[in-house]
Length: 178
Image 1 (cartoon, rainbow, N blue to C red):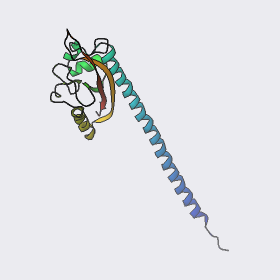
Image 2: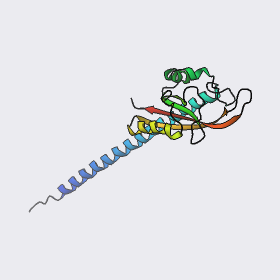
Image 3: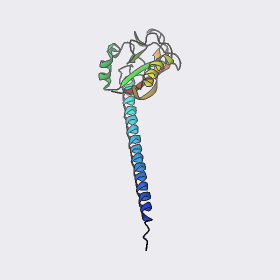
Image 4: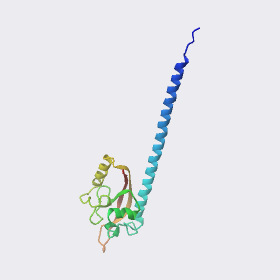
């Protein structure tokens, strides 16, 4: 009698199937964990952005308490590290006033406040702000970025004859890679 060894092939098929299933399981778990970590980072950044926005507008740091820009605010004379400390953030930010396409010049000596303050003197459009941010994204220096728009009043008249016009305060907050 001759013994046939057909079971050996079944054993190899079984081992290959186990390995394939293990690889699929590991990839699935890594993907799920990665997605939840990214969501947590974005949630943290959104909370940070809302806090910065609230501090700038409602806490009278940048406004007069009635959601109108106060160009005499002592906050505007601070350096960028001092601004970050006053706002209680370790994220990068830049805020500017615009009408949707053009930057409205309300800050003395600068078009906005934050990271690009001092290098933004020639900027006139919203696209001028987007260009350096897009460059940081292309260089993969920005991990996540969030933009918030708030409506604020800007006095386009004089102190004797105020003309309050509603504009948009755009606040960009991002985290840079180490």
